[in-house]
Each structure stands twice: as structure tokens, then as C-alpha cells.
Amino acid sequence: MTDQSVPAFERRMLEALICPVTHSTLEYDAAANELVSPGARLAFPIREGIPIMLVDEARKLDD
Amino acid sequence: MTDNTDNTTHFGFQTVPESEKAGRVQGVFGSVASKYDIMNDVMSVGIHRIWKDAMMDWLAPRAGQRLLDVAGGTGDISFRFLKRAGNAHATVLDLTEPMLVEGRKRAEATQKADQLDWVVGDAMKLPFDDNTFDVYTISFGIRNVTRPQEALNEAYRVLKPGGRLMVLEFSQIPNASMQWAYDRYSFNVIPVMGQIIANDRDSYQYLVESIRKFPDQDTFLNMVRQAGFENAKYRNLTMGVACLHSGWKI
Image (cartoon, rainbow over all chains, first blue to last red; front, side, top):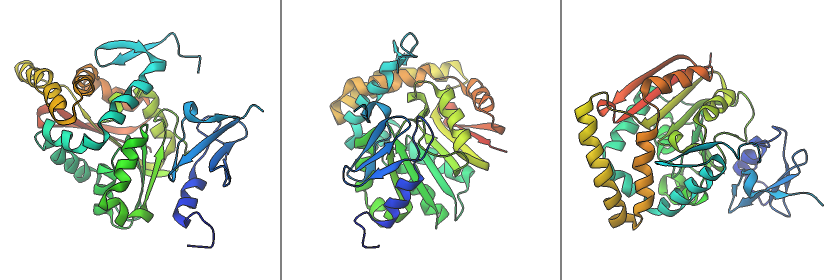
């Protein structure tokens, strides 16, 4: 465990995920606790440490 | 998601628009999550444990493997896999958040926390790179997927070359009188037990109907081959009440 708030194994898990729509890398937004897919314009929420990788549950980035 | 609005699929014996099935399945499993394991025991008279062990026997988990356990719900398959493999890793993916939350609470999950990941996702749109996993399992889950062929195609994509697919699912008994007796049991007894134990008759009515609607052994075997898997085979369990399908990504 490092000084970061997310445990090492959780960070590895988040890094292994890709966007289910575009298959591209996701950006982890620690402040919002979301995984952001710039290509799909979607932000996937992480709830209680579980990433929710469903398009229907993702926040649309249309601003 | 407007491309599928005209297509329909089965939700038990009802025909529903494809776009509705995932939500309805989430409803079923969200509502039964906390009593799911005990219901499985009661419905199958404990036999599902023997089937899952038979799955592990054929799979022969090894140290160092990475498992993707789709529709992994409460972690039942992943825990068995890790127990046999020793130092290995399992990613549990499910459409339903409450099932994963339930699984993560279990003692096995706490002890093996660094070997387990929990991800909510869609079997037809996996959030993983190509060639990532050594083993892909789906146990009593594929009949709930809107388009099972797409799930098999995705399984092939995320498996490494040399990787293994293993599907455990209810199937059809290749004997008419046995099937008749089994139908009497499943249609008359299971929904009533669902009502008594989980206070949810409709969800269990759906479960038995969806079992009857699922393709038989040979039809499903062709779907496994269609996805690209080689050396595809199946083994009947309990005379075909359930079935294991295996295939390799060569």
C-alpha cells in the first residue's frame, strides 16, 4: 500500500479496464471517482470500489 | 442504443424488446441477491455444488492463471477456482451490482481480497482488452444474456491464445419422459419455493421458463464453434439437467 488513497490492487484493477464502447484507455478521475472515456464522452461511476462499466449507467459528457 | 429497438428476445416465456431484457434481468437478480445462494441449494437439492465441482474438475485451475468469471454474481465459481489454483487471480463481472456487493461481503472474499476484482459490466460489451485472460467461465448466466452469441464472441476476444472457455448452464434432458417429470418439478415446485424462501415467485418463474427456452446441447455447441473456439465439446451433468461446454482459443 502506498500513500495514495486507492489500494494498490484496486488501482491495478482500474488500470486493466478499457472503455466497453471504444476499447480505448480510460482516465481515472479521483475527485469524481469516475472512469472517463473521452472517445465515448462517457464517465463510468465507481460505487463502493466497484466500477460500473455499463453504458446505461454512465454519465454523458456533453457539456 | 437505438439499433436494437425492433428486435425481440425471450424473457422467460414472454417476448420482450431486446432493449428491455437487461433491465428485467437486473430486476430479477437484484431482487433475489441476498437469498440467491440458499435458493440455489433448495432448487437443485444441493446438486449445483456437484455441478460446479465437476466444472472445476474439467477446468483444472492452475497457479498463475487469470480468470474472468462472467455473471459471477456472488463469487461462487471464483472462490472455487482460487481454492484449487492457489496463487491465481479472478475478476468477477456481473450485470447486477447487489450480487457483487453480496459476494464481496463473504468471508472467502475478505480473505482473498487482493486476488479478486469485482466489476459491473455487460457480457456482450466487456470492458477488457483483447487477449487478457487465461480462463473465461460463465455459470448459469449465459441464458440470461440478451444475445448469447455476442457474449461468446466477446469471450473469444478477451481470452489469450491458448485460453479456455467453460460454460455451465441448465440444458435439455435428451429423454422425453424424464423431461416431462423434470418440467412438472420445475414449473410447479420451483416458483412456489421462490415464493416461500425469497418471497418472490415471479423471479423464479422467470428462471424456470428461461431454462426451457435455452438452446439444447448441440445447438449451443455450434454457437461456441461459431465464436471461433476449437476442440469444442460438452458433457452432460445429471442426465442433461445441466451441461458443461468447453472450448479453446487456439
